[in-house]
Picture 1 (cartoon, rainbow, N blue to C red):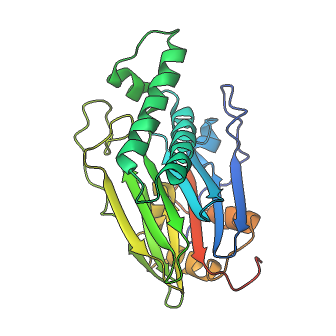
Picture 2: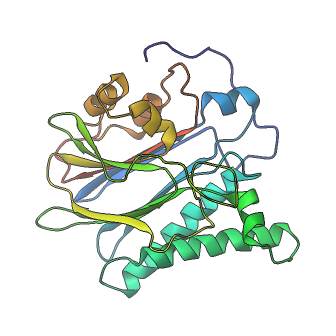
Length: 286
């Protein structure tokens, strides 16, 4: 993609990381929605033998047909960022599914975020041998961004509800014109006292949490991605935007999405994760 990065054989992570494979992908469809996601280890982590610190999880809430999802990017300064990302995704997804079963209205994302933060504290407590960690200690171990939400089928078009903590992104892709419309603002310098980054990550839970709601009309797709995807995408007018606009015109095979996401481009070497939801898929997966 443009000027590629250097070619090399990836190194295995230097710590026990069997639960964090280099690449993950998944995909399936319901009568109303199609879902694909892929997460790949970036060139920097492959070169230096570090585990992938991105994570994604998605599930169908069968009683309502809603798709629930979570995408996280472990903050690189955290000691075990990869574990923070996957635990935040698991906790957010499990609690969202619980709320969908218990409450018919909008998802209480403040509650979802607090549940994910509690899970990070629980994992930190276990790591510290039962000692209660302070917030700064949890952050130093497991700080992570999080985008989580649901897509509910609706006769007028699926309804999307989502929130974010940190700087991971979300977009609506106009499939006809190949244009990307960001759902959250751009990155900005944060003021977190807990860890030296440009974001305020979990376990900090902003009040109120940043959230949005929209209807996904035919011809649009929802994209959720970490900054490993969002940074090279930019405003979507370059080569990366063109590549994915064409590839996502219909749901690709999960392995195809993972292959595309693993493009090589000079200076862009972060882990990359992308989750996509399409309404009313009309074509078979390629």
